[in-house]
Image (cartoon, rainbow, N blue to C red; front, side, top):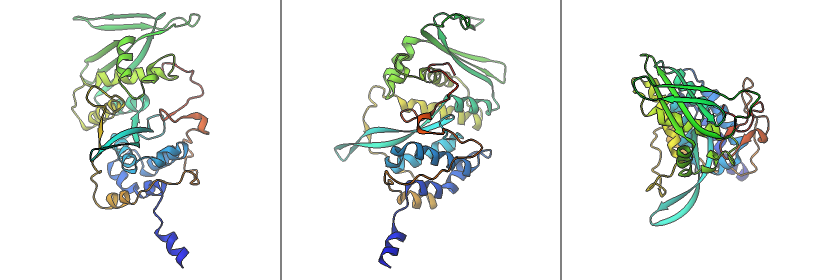
Length: 310
């Protein structure tokens, strides 16, 4: 009986708590995303990256809620969960703590833009030194970009740009030189990812920078546009601009009812917790840990070469 009582009162694991929070995700997710599918992708992320189960549980819950609110699946393609060491100032004391962070990916941002109803198209590309590129300002702004011929190496990346075409016929363009992008990247917690010599998927980070920059000029005329803008703003969490390096003790996530009760009992699961296969058979995601980058939360595409402009 004592053994049974101990089993019954044992705190639920992070994976079990995430499953119990499915009704709360359902309240936040857009209608076209089923809560079961959303939870399965979170469970797969926990399976691939055990460090997420050791992260501050409130940060994990909040990150999942942010992704749900933006309407992005945490599958390493639309969005990802990554773990960062955060310095916490609590009552004059400093300590390091692992926090889960929600990170939108280019594919997810593109999806939100297409679903907005206001954005006709959005593109973002990296320009290489052997490409043909022309950027004209003035009354007749335009960008012309022709990649180098297949028989020629494209060379080093020199710039990136983004173009958004809106339903009213207008277009917004943004161009940044490599030095400007690297300067922004150097202020972030993942600065090396922007470096073509170190970041194997640097083009993803360059494109996200341009999409984030251009988002500032898009009118927020609908809730759908708001989702896109909100997701793009999450990119800012990657940076530690001057005066923002110190992190104060985070406020508790304010949720009533089932969410608050479930969150209260979340405890980090043991590292050797058995991982059940909860992947969606229609989209199994990475087949092995080698397909998954724990530092970026990104699922590798075996058909894509490192550094490609995806």
